[in-house]
Image (cartoon, rainbow, N blue to C red; front, side):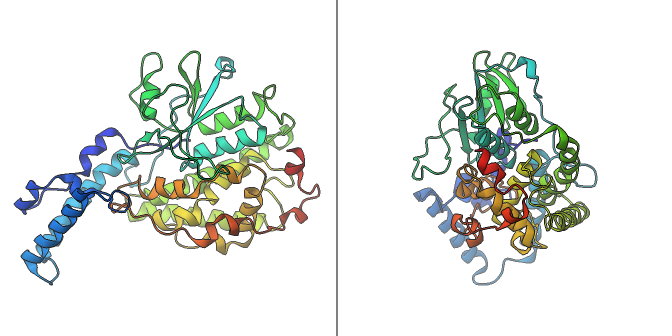
Length: 406
């Protein structure tokens, strides 16, 4: 499980579809798709003004003629389907089918000279950051944080750290590459597939160790204890292994991937199936959490981490952009308090950069939000609100177990 980036070929798809308006041929495509909210250059302003002037000239204050609307709608729908077929592969019914991870972990091949590549918007990368932090592997496994590029790729950039309490995008700290695709191509034999995060890198061999998020968090949990500051913290104890796997089998297809199946659905039928599965599962989990602090009782596990990284993005992104609109997470009393409980565990909040998450979705997923306008952050997603007492420690017979371990 990983976060994809748009293939570089999608740059070509940013050009507007050809119409019968020949005047548009004399205007640079960039004028039409410039992000004036973040890039106030003259080209974007001129392009927008020209479009308004042409509109007034052709039909004044009236709505565009029906034939133009029909033509543009057909052209846009066709272009959208082409882009979605690459961004979000689907089955014949239009249901999103997530591509499998290319590089699975071989524990015997892993060295102690490791580097982790992540992107802050990505929930799959987020789970690796949380486990790394809880286990105290910050020094043992350094990170490079990629940011979102305008073409949908993962790019490295030096962002001033205005708030030392949260992670921000960085330069590539080990290979000095401009983007993640360049890092993947450094491996022996190169690589032309999807450049996804998270990605665990062997610094000495210049090789991809793994880009499957669950493999990485399991490895961080048990494979580097000799380097961890908190080796005693076990997020996947043997006695709970089967229960954790049962929860994963429910949560991954219906919640973790379920929100993507809603947002990337390419037919009404596919969306209806996905959204029904998502909310019936959230209802079930909310009921369960009414009598259990965590999914598996009193102990925080990998199953909780995997659920948390979807929940923390729910009202922020998925409810709106992915059309998961039946309920807000805030409307689930137990689930929302559970999410706040985990958010308040030391070091977890520092992995949650909400502005980067919003930018990564609203400005990176062009087919879902062509205008690239980022909505205002919901007040219930701000740090102050999430820091309100969850009062869930009273449900646990061992109290704040995780906090005591840390």
